[in-house]
Image 1 (cartoon, rainbow, N blue to C red):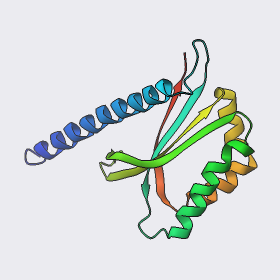
Image 2 (spheres, one colour):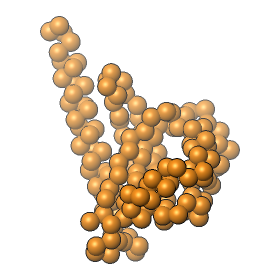
Image 3 (cartoon, rainbow, N blue to C red):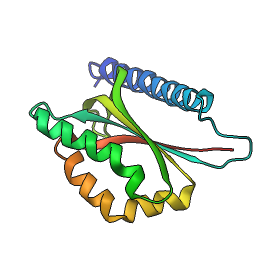
Length: 151
């Protein structure tokens, strides 16, 4: 047992370090959005729905192009979904599951929605189901998700 203790402490230290990075990067992403030319006005209660994912190595260029196109089209199809951002994370994010297994998140998507109700509309919308089928072709199952409520 004593020989496992350093490994457990190292895993905890690495997990804590990555959680801090996640919180910092999520906060910076929200700040970047809020400081952009399309920033929220005081009192607007928008919602930022962001998720980071691990890419499927075998995904083809056609899979990625279909996913990117479908992602860009979501605001035109789903009421209350205003904008989407899709791209590579500046620095990969290490995520750990409850068993301590590590996944590296390389890409992310952020969506600006009108409010929490719009998130429900997005989740239940047929266009989301179509998009999800394309998303499943480029990502390993499991994401790291954060929702930020505007104040």
